[in-house]
Length: 141
Length: 141
Image (cartoon, rainbow over all chains, first blue to last red; front, side, top):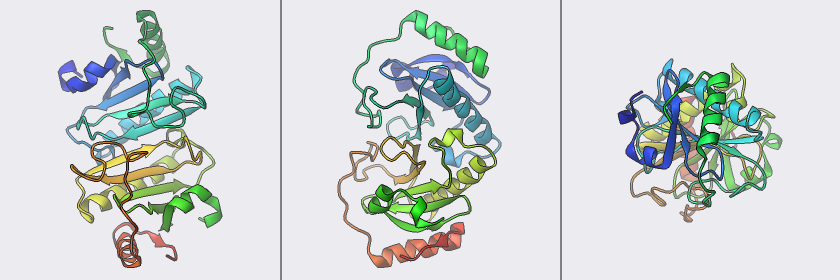
């Protein structure tokens, strides 16, 4: 998926890690929590309006990212949401959470303090592991 | 699904409208927005961990409720989320939103002002329409 298809606000807020068959995978630049954003390739705004088989493919990609957060990054909980009130293009939040995390138990939107930035090394590490574990096609970091 | 399976906090915050094959359907008592909560019958906490075919059934039920919000209640946007940081049992938020609504564009959690209560008549009306349109099995209101 070309970068031009991803809303500028999301590119401002996120690193672009790569793509899957049905979506692109972003990572919010705030390193306080592993806050991934999956951007399905669709003109539709709401996940629940996606037709099959596209909805199935997107859901499978969300499931892979969630499993990565739990098994590879060691989080025991994942928040999952399709909101899109500010950036209207469909994008799905898949966020690792745990008791005592940076804004626990609040949702991240409007509540997550600044946790600093990801180093290039950490981005490269997560990207390489996403390639191995989930089949991500990597983007240039 | 027996009422005893639904967490007490959700019953405190919501009307119980009825059930589908794989879940119960609740409606948040705050009438500021149509804030439905689907409670799948599962011991798992996170929607993305649900195995098929259960995940498919639950997703289909979410899709029905979302379509009801749009076509029957006239909302052009739906927020969809599985969080579960406060109430750990799996429950999926399906919320009608529109530009200029009671907390637009913020997410509802922590931001929705008190919009009063639903009248019995309005609950009965929505319940009857959910029965007709989505196949809800109604609970006693």
